[in-house]
Amino acid sequence: MREERPHYLGHRQRLRERFLKSGLSGFAEHEVVELLLTLAIPQKDVKEPAKEFLKRFGSLRGILDAPFSELQEVKGIGKVTPVALRIIREAATLYLQQKAEQETTLASPEALHSFWRSRLGGLQHEVFEVAYLDSGYKLLREGVERLEEGTVDRAAVYPRRVMEAAMKRGAASVVFAHNHPNGSVQPSEHDKTLTKALVLAATTLQIKVVDHLIVSADEVFSFKKEGLL
Image: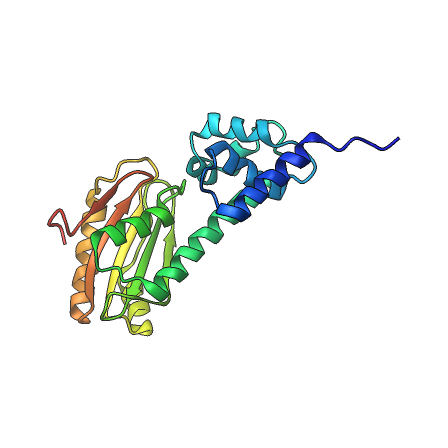
């Protein structure tokens, strides 16, 4: 007697066929999560874990931004799936950076905000990054560097180190960005003092500071827009 084929295999196949035909158009969000989970969990029905993920983290973005420890608390997920989800997230971030380097200028506030929120908005610890741009506000090749990675309270950034990196790359202008994991994008006194020091150092070297952004998952604060640059 032939062993009955698990029902979830047919469901997986149908999801993949739909995706190949029209991308994610028409997919419910839980189906998108299911499709991702099939890549990491080959021998199990992933419908319930997908729904539990959404119930717990609220959205696909919430799932991809969630800490490893919280992802592992979902029943049936194990240790491999959180790593796979982080790989997917980091690969998407790298794709967006490389696409921006090839196609996009960061001259508009909208482009800047979208770019940095996608990179830093979901991080659970504070980091400071700088984008190196040419004279047309286009990202130089490998044009984003993470200079410091600190605690959730602050990141230590040294203007001299930042400017040395900009000069080495031949940047005409720079954008600074860091995140506030607590959700508030209002600048601290340290943020304001650091920005003044960075602008002073850049002006001395005739490098233009386009903006300094503070981002969270949902908001962006622009030093330029608020007249602090």
